[in-house]
Length: 355
Image 1 (cartoon, rainbow, N blue to C red):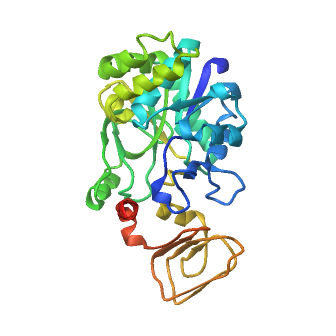
Image 2 (cartoon, one colour):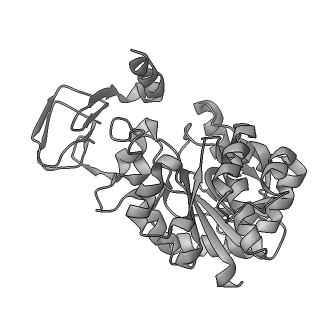
């Protein structure tokens, strides 16, 4: 494997509305220090991947509105920031980035990862990453990274794989991708043993995914791959505006992975969270004896259990008589949300924005 032909694509265009009020359209969660480490989630992701990919080969896919923020936080060259003019989900932006990288290096081996996931056990992560890269480099497979589930979670999609002769930290053949299940179905997945969480991370050769677009998403192939003369020229921005207007809003899972039979999954064992909701942050913050999660030493609980509080470290907070609440305090917004209704946050915000 030629390291100089290994590339990483960090997807950082989302809004992170489930992390409201901390995450906003102007400053979404990938640019925030959610964990109190002194670094934003995208900075942690960038630092992680530059240990295995040449820094000049790391590209960030983001919305045009966040271009300067990416450059400011990561200190990368402007040509490493690829901006989608419209949000059209992951398939169009991956097609665009792949076509651009493939024009530069037809032997490119690519990693694709969200910007806002948490990886705790990095040593194991790098081992699983190498397993996936080796598989992608030595075959024409599209490789996904599955996470061994430790609970029947309804917030993740699942990958069903061929369990015959499969063991952890190996590569298995994907049977099918499954949507986020209800609790009963999630429990069934766990009991069967051949279902892993879908991490949204991938590895493939640029030529392999290019051919998959040609076979299974021909419209996107025509838009981004058939004529690559505009890439890396002054006309690229105009081309992209027209191209994205033609694209349907579709994920890479729906467009390619669920249709291509040449898809494998690394049965990974590193500790992972997609940090998709406030609830997913609960287990990562310091807790008191009543399972209250806090981010400062000035929060005082009385007769309260299983609450999550995130506020300015200098603010003194007193909470009495609450069970299972999420309390997020920012400079201009305060959210007090029953954690049982967290899945309704998007609809609540929609109502707020309509007023």
